[in-house]
Length: 114
Length: 110
Image (cartoon, rainbow over all chains, first blue to last red; front, side, top):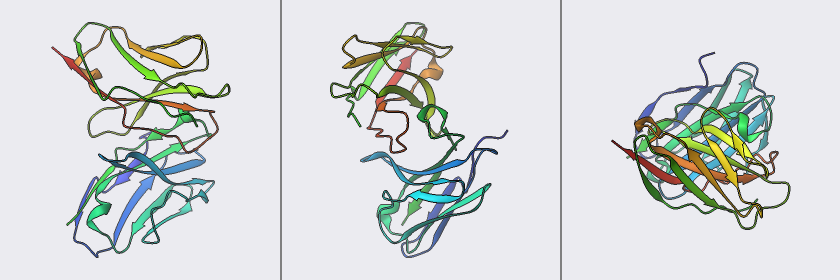
């Protein structure tokens, strides 16, 4: 298996633009997680899905952020409109169970909002 | 979930053992101690976890004190590739909201 795949790896956009980050989880994994990492706040969970259904989105910072999982092999995290404070590395992770030792992370998307 | 505290940075000579401490004085009886590491520009990677017994795998050893208020991750023969940020997390194993903290930045020097 290729592991968790994220695209793009780097994204530079201007304030106010829409940004869409993509994730392909490991096949057979029922859980998918979106994280954001910044120098100041570290790694924070934004939302997670179980069998394509959002379970907990309490970490989503505000209404500008939305996440979807239309099928078991694809998820998106959208920011609209983007702001400079959204600049961060966004990680997607998947796991077969809700067990911390079984989470596999993707390489991340580095987002820069100018 | 218990909060963990780690030193922000540490150095280690290549080939020597790296001992990374973690304090979790408020850990609950059902919470495990998990260790992850994050190499630059990559996602975090699971290393090891334990409840109260010491654990060892191909990557590292985990020593947990008898009162479970602290633990130490041991990399027995550190290599340059072990340079990374190491995270210690206390979690009951079923809580998706892992509290990651800022970890310890380990620099392995030649």
